[in-house]
Image (cartoon, rainbow, N blue to C red; front, side, top):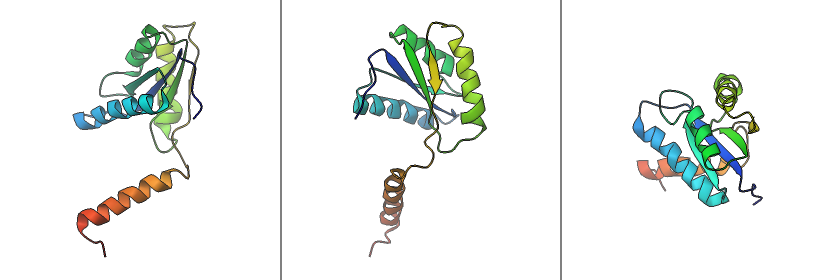
Length: 133
């Protein structure tokens, strides 16, 4: 797996929730992603409702030594949040750090690797319901 330079950061952004377990899940996703990819600086952020905000995560990345920041909307499809809201919030956050370039990636979208994940969840549901033959 190709890796990023140590001074690149990745921020994984979800919507944010009033449900604490949902917010904690993104923290775990960020930890797992960092461990699996060995990317040195990975931070979670929530678009709204919960902390850390995108601005807080961006500032933390810079404080940890990031010279470039890539923001990944942890969303399945391109909607208003991933195509408009998150890029605007990122631009606002980045304004405090004009010497740090940033970019926003596409959401997860259509990817054949997702078939395995969806199938795994379907089979888990079948087992949970006791429908195995």
